Image (cartoon, rainbow, N blue to C red):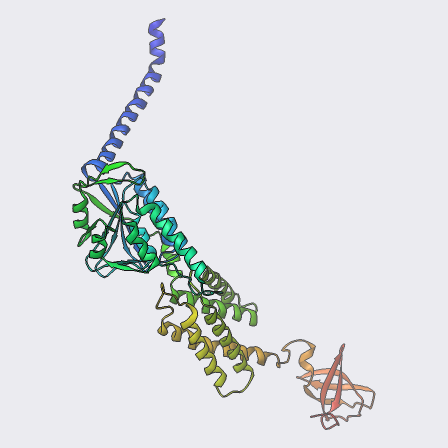
Length: 455
């Protein structure tokens, strides 16, 4: 009985052995991969914070830090060159950095770069803050960006905002071992610092000419994490990997560029205008609707100036008036000037000093102006066109009497090569030319061409 049972259970035993062997091999392979990443070749994940601090970049930093944690990276290196940006996005980035299980280095680089305004606070929130030669940081005073209903700040509101910003700065700068008193002057006095001034003032930890030198300097350094945990960085034979923006993030980042936003706005308005004035074309309406929605998304993020919007609306009105009235081009030129000024005023803030470039504004405005006037003239002209089909096309047409029309009686006329039964208040002999006044069923009311009231 025992022998038979062993033989009967043999297939099950073989399956169990194979499953166990597979688990052992998988565990060994996983251990080798982990050892390769964390031991023999520590992984340094590099992120780039270029341009204005905005929700798209905040999402990118969050994804990068999460990816570093998932891959058990030894360090996250954030290279930064920013004029600043939105305080909400800055706060979100700082929270991600403070909560990161992987140590974070923020490095203002290359030479000539800056970590200004919001970038200054992000720099000080890192486990290690570094700058390249010829860079600067600071100037972190909060400002109101010009927008739809921007109003000047009174002194009480200014103090309230500054005090909140300095308290937020102290909440992490002290734990990072920075100089909070000096750091506060970047907010209260809009003070800026060169890399040497920042190092001497204990705002940053070191100066490095490039990324490789930076990583060599911090190799073996003991740091204190935000949660007070001590950690020694081991970066011998490190491998540095870039973490790129996703395709979606790159697309959204392009949309919020001032030039692209202005072009989307123009194409959106022109496409919707074409569809409304020429129903049934479909394609301009679809393209215009998509562009208009993308422009609204960019408008939600960019500091849009209400004066610029009003100037662009004035330009639309002048183009429409040019199509309706004869101004010898005065209204058209006025509309072009108004739209160019609107483009220049549309986006204006210390964070986006260039705004819409003049070249893009001219390239978009001039064709837009002529297309708008042309389409408006087609609409106005179509209102005076007679119907090209049906009974209405007969009104006003001339024909020849083929069978005499007595006064108040009926006869026959030929119009467009067709014979019609007709009646007239005045008599008309055979061969007389008559004009159609009205269509009544299958009969035409006519009058002699030379009669009173005829043209």
